Amino acid sequence: MCLIRQALEATSPDNRRPTRAARPKSVSQIQLYALARCREAIDVASRIMREPKDGDNMRLLAAELILDRGVGRPGQAVSLEGLIGLFSR
Image (spheres, one colour):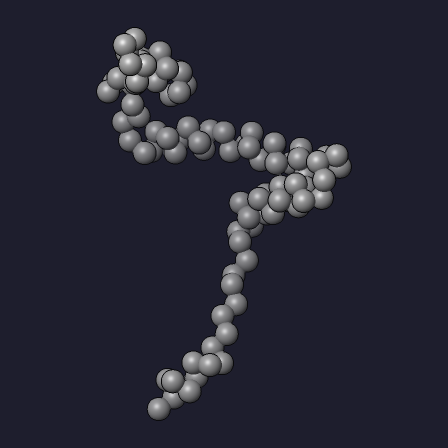
């Protein structure tokens, strides 16, 4: 059963807050829930990337999201030109 559905079904009637038993027991349960939906999220991003009506900005953001997850973000270049004199004593 879905964790969200469990939490909704286990709310107390007076204040509509989840009971202690309905709360996730650990972060790993939330991570597993999110991991189970990764394929669907990538499919959504793929559909946005391919849809010309969504505009170039949305399509580019979707493509970047897919590449960041699949290949990883590119490394950031750091310039050390100004620091070389400080350490060469």
